[in-house]
Length: 68
Image (cartoon, rainbow, N blue to C red; front, side):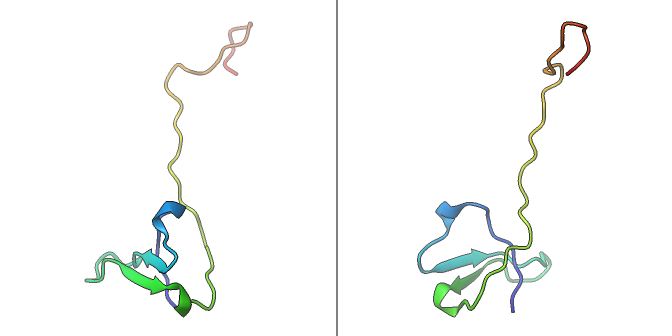
């Protein structure tokens, strides 16, 4: 069993396998290649994405002048 992080981008996966980053950033291992043939199962625990921020003052105002 191995735990790691990988980009949420299908264009970076290959038919041969996956590159994952170990969760411990203090180790000397930066990236690990996992061949697809070595996988018995793969479980996605979480997806971390960029948050979208609204620009200041971009909220729409209704006819009453209240932010919607």
